[in-house]
Length: 479
Image: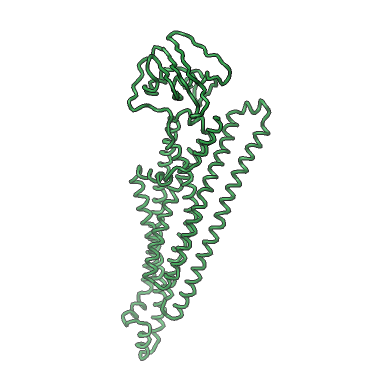
């Protein structure tokens, strides 16, 4: 019965907590200043990146116009006016292109270097700030998880394996941290870069921009579908990793038992099966994303091919200059690059979403044993212990471990509990420090019902010698 209840609880644990990733992101509110700086630096570095294609166009236009202006210098005066009309130039523009082309070139090159330095500096600052924020949030997660696990009831630990809790406090936290520190910023950068680039492209050449637009909803739809497919796959990876970690932890903790009974080969087979299961699921995830990226790049390349064709026609027709075409091509990279980034972002987001759900499942766990709102501090005890018609069941099972048990132990008495294995001796001892709450009846110390006093005041006055000695890392005095 107890085994079935534990399995039922494990299934509930595997169910994702609601809004896990959204709740995880709310931790950014604890570091508003650092977060604001990280996003400010991101906007500045992205702005510097967006300025470069325009400068490249200025360089190419200066070179092209300067070369044409110098060639026009040898054109007879009678034909110069006609040539200028066809080019759409004035005499002043001809003079400017001929005399100041080199200066325009130098100015543009200096600005390109300046924007590159600016982008590098602010990109570094943004990465540093986002890493500080994500590490700080991971610090909070781990501490909050540890504090929560410390305060959860014994019944929770009975139903959950140590390896599972360890993975949630380490690997799952790291996956959420990576998304908050990298994926979230990349998603915003991709959105800003894509939006700003489309606005610039539309202002530069609306016809060519309209050719690009159909690619975007198709790519976004693909990412949404793959995101929905991949999240449960990543959740399964984490579950199998937890099982692997549990086997490793139990084997190392019980290595003396394993060696005493010569069970090394069996333990190796058990570990190998868990590792093979994890590898199979990881390969399944990789296979899914190996299909996604080529499809997205195919769509992107088709869009680029269409732009090349129609852009080439505009150049031939004389409605698009070489400088404008080069500028458009560079901005076009800023359209398809964020689309490529979305694959990485979706991967990180799916992993983080699955891991965040597992983390917040612990945060949302109900404590079976907790202080009442009006719990009082237990005064210094004299030692009178009374069990009054106590009935107790583990995990609300139908079969009681203790049924209508009553006895009293007076201060100074030595009381021994005798009985066969499984008769409830340990259970009675566990009820005294209120590791579990009784289902029926009362357990009292000096007349105080244990449920009416605070746990700290109760347990600080009880000494227990456990059946199994557990030594913690540290000195003898600390133990």
